[in-house]
Amino acid sequence: MTDTRYLVHGVFWDGPPAATPIDDGGAPVLRLQSPAGDFRELSLRPGSRLGLHVVEPGRFCLGHIQVQSARSRRHILCHSAAPAVRGKQCERCFVLDESRLMHDFHRGGRVTPGLRDYLMQEHWLYVATFAGGTTKVGTASGPRKWNRLAEQGAAAARYVARAQDGRVVRILEDLVTARLGLTQQVRSAAKGEALLQPLPAEALDAVNAGAAGDVRALLAGTAVNGFQTVEEQWLRPGHADALFGRSPRHAYPHALDRGQHGFDVAAISGANILARLDGTDARFVVDLSRLAARTVVLGEYASEVPAVQESLF
Image (tube, rainbow, N blue to C red; front, side, top):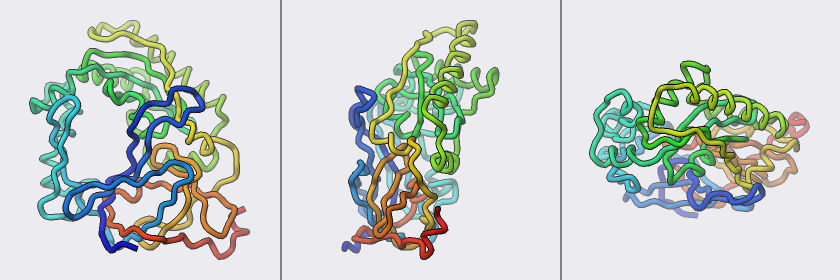
C-alpha cells in the first residue's frame, strides 16, 4: 500500500468518442491530485479494480482554473489547502475560477481573453435523458461534444443545434428552459437512484426523441441568429450498457465520506459504476461523484459485504 494522500477531483471521460452503438468509446478515469500538484488517473473501464481509504473528514478545495485558450486551461493549486465551503472550492478559489464566468457570458458578463477564445468556438446544444426518464437541455464545446455527454451519464441523447459560439448556444439553452421547461441540471444523486431501476431502453429513447423534436420545433421559429438545427444522435459508450440493463442491482451500502472501499468495476455511466464486491454475487451502484474533494490513500482495500445479504433481495 502507499501512504501518499490524494485529493479526488472526480470522474472524467477523455479519449475518442464511441464510433458504433456497441463501441467502448472514451477512457473513464478517477482523477487524483497529490500534495505536490501532479495528477494521477485510475482507469475505470470494466474489469478494473478500485481500492481506497478516505482518510480525512470533510471536503477540501480543489483549486481553480485559468482558461488560456479554446483548447488549453491551467489548474491552480489552492494556496492554503483550505476546506471546501462552496461545493468543491474555498471562497478565494471560487472567486478566482475563470470557468464560472462562462455562464454569464451571453448576458454581457466579463470574461478573460483565454475564456473568450474558448467561448467563441463552435458549440452544440443537446437534449439528454437519464435512466429514470428525467430530461435536460445542455451545451458542449465542439471538441468535447461526445465526452461531455459521457461524463453526464446520459442514457440517450440527441444534438439539436450547432451554434457558431458559446454565447449563442447559451441563449438557445435559456430559451428552451423558459419555453419548454427543460431543466439545465440533474442532480448526481438522482442519476444514481434512477440506475437502481432504469426504464427500458425503448422508453428512454422515445422520451428523448420526443423532447428533441419539441426543441427543434421551438428553435425553428426563433429569431436568434448564428445557429442551425441538427438531427444527430449521441452514441452511448458500450461499457455503460450493463448499468442500463434489467439485471438486479442494489444501492451501495456504505457512505463514501469515510472508511475503506474496494471493488471491481463491472460497468460505468458518467460517475456511476456497477460494482462487484468480494464475497458476494450481488451488484451495487456506486456514485463516485461523492468522492470529489475528499482525501484518500490508495491500496488493496475491500468493501465490507452487508452482514445479512438476504436483506438485499
